[in-house]
Structure formats: structure tokens, C-alpha cells
Image (cartoon, rainbow, N blue to C red; front, side):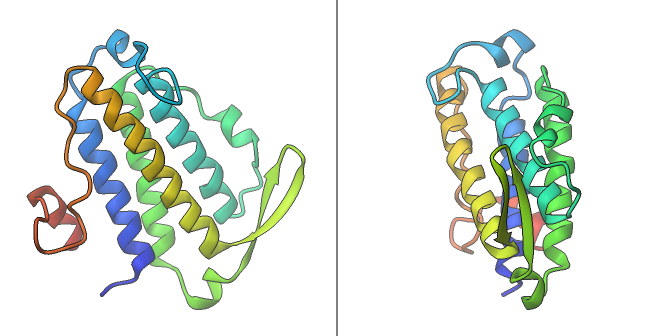
Length: 172
């Protein structure tokens, strides 16, 4: 099996592409419409995922932005605009995971927080980032159903049995 961190990054990219494909036809107003969930709309939920990705990618790459990553990422108002930004972040994450070594997984990274710096290790940051994605994509999944769109299958990626055809390209 290839590196589990790279596999999770590719699963993440596929799940995001699949989710954005399902909502590609939403107007800007439908994207921003109130929906049940932790954040009040698909727009806010998916922008949150993207901005948190940028925050942690910056920490992993030692960019030094910290919380400014949230300020510098302009909220995307359209599905297409946010889909493109998310895809770029997903490829950055996959590229980072391709370069992982045991030493890098254990390397310290400073996460700049509003209350001050906190040192974390690369491996746990990646695990947290994947869990964060899954958590909020699940909320978006419910919102998609609320919008009258059949929510896409997002969990048939890892096993040969039941793997959806669109996931196969991520294993080539």
C-alpha cells in the first residue's frame, strides 16, 4: 500500500471534487442560502474547510502566516470559484504528503494561534486536517440534500469492493 498520508490526501482531493461536482449547478444565491448545519450555508461551510486547509498548509510549509491565512483568503462567493481554490489547496496537500519521510512526520511545526504559538508535529497536524475535512464535508453532505440534490457517495474510495469509478483515477 502506498503511504497512508498520501492516500488520505488523494481521498480528500477526490471527495472534494465529487462534492463540488454535485453542487456545480447551484446559483450563487442557492450556494449562500440558509441550510441546517454548524455553519449556516454551503458557502460558509465550504469556505471554512478551504480556509482551515490554507492555515494548516501554511503551518506545514512553515510559511509564517498563522491566523493571517484566514484574513488573506478571500471568501469565495461562487461554487466554481471555491471549487478551483479548494482543488489547488488539495494538490498542495497531496504534494506535501508525497515528500513525507518518517523524520518529517515527526518534525515540529509552529501553529501560530491568536493566543500565541503552539508547537505540533507534522503527523498529528495532517491527521487533524483530514479529520476536519471529513467532519465538515459530512455537514455539507446534509446541506446538499436540503438543497434538493442527491448527496454524492463520498466513502467508497479505499476498498476495491464498492470503489466508485471516479475514485479509480486517484489510484493510477
